[in-house]
Length: 264
Image 1 (cartoon, helix red, strand yellow):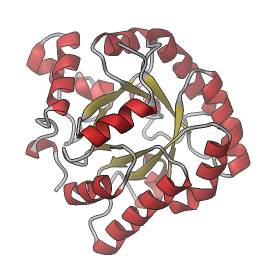
Image 2 (cartoon, helix red, strand yellow; image 1 turned 90 degrees about the horizontal axis):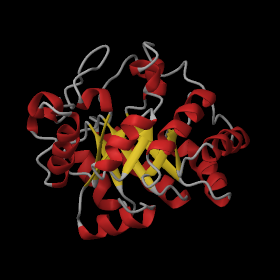
Image 3 (spheres, rainbow, N blue to C red; image 1 turned 30 degrees about the horizontal axis):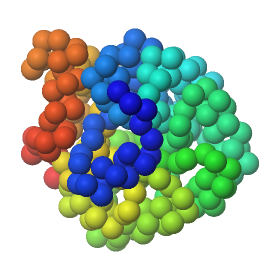
Image 4 (cartoon, rainbow, N blue to C red; image 1 turned 180 degrees about the vertical axis):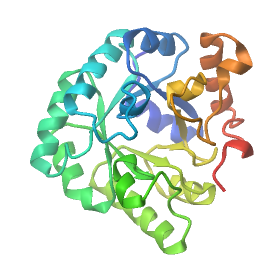
C-alpha cells in the first residue's frame, strides 16, 4: 500500500469513492490491516474498554494512546494514522498542544478530539501549529456521564441543526476530517453533503464518505457487547485477512452498513 495522506481522502470524497477504516492497537494487527490496504487506522481510546476492560473510555491516558500509537505505526508505516486525545487531555488549547505533541511524536498523522463548536479555538491553535485534526461529533463516549449512557445523538431537529453547525464551524476552524458516531442516517447524509472535508461514520448509515469499526467488533470478540451498527465479518469468512478484505469491499460498495446495522 502506498503512503496515504489527507489529500488521498479529499480526492476520494470528490470522486465519491468510499473508504474503510479501523481501530488498531498493536503492530501485528496494524500489519494485517495494511496488508489488506485499509488506508486509515485509529488508535482509539476505545482501548480502555476492549483492551483494559474498563466500563468507559475515561480512564485512558495520553501515555496509553502514545504507547499504542508507536506500536501501530511500527506495523503500518503507510496508513494515515489517527490518535485519540483522551478525556481531559485537551481541556485548554495549551493542554491540547502538549498532548498532541506527544501523540504526533509517537507516530500519529492526526489527532481526534471529541466535542462541538466549543473546540473551535483549540482546532485553530492545533492546525496553526501543524497538527491535523479529526473532529468527533454525535455520540462522544467521553461525555457518557453527560449523556447518561451510550445513546444516539441528533434525533431532535434542534440538536440535528446544532450538529450541522458544529461540523461546519470545526471545518472552518481547520478540522480535516469529521467523524460521526451514532447519529441518524438522514443527519449523517446532511453533514456529509455540506462538509467539504471527508466524513467518517460509525453507526451513521452508509451515506458517509468513510466507515470505521472497532477491530474487536469486526472479528466478533468484543469484551462486553456487540453494538447494533457493527458486524462480525470473521464469522462470515472464517479468516481474519478475508474478514478485513470483506469489510473493505462491503464499505466501498456501500453494502455495509446495511439496514440491519443502521441507526433509525
